[in-house]
Image (cartoon, rainbow, N blue to C red; front, side, top):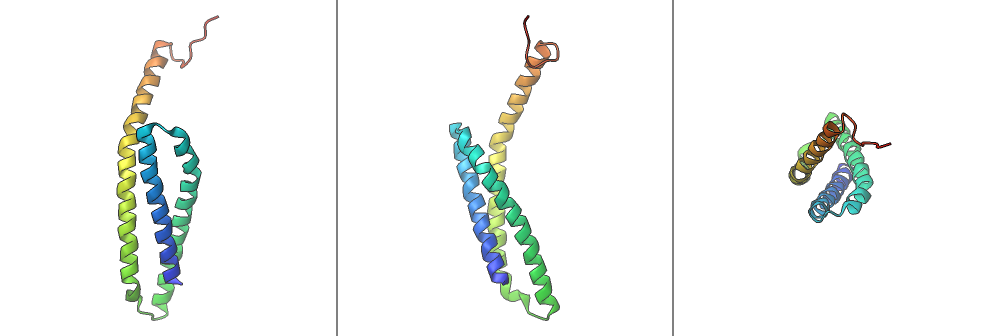
Length: 125
């Protein structure tokens, strides 16, 4: 049961990592439609990841309470942690690309708003 949960977590982590790498490429190529299309899938995967993480913690706690030596799962859990670390790094790389662009757009909007007396769109009658 624990191995199944760990394997499922690894699958989700791999899918998320691959999705983030595709996001990075799409940002570089300004292919926004692809980014948007993947977004819902990524949100679902992140929800699944969170749910399964809690399930794994519960399973490990239950096994430990029942006197099972949970160190037998150490290797697979260490591998999962390494994958999660890689996912974190990839996400940081994506954020490093996206956040400056977001800030640039924010500054442009603030400048336009200031020029239009506090309104983003100037209406001429």
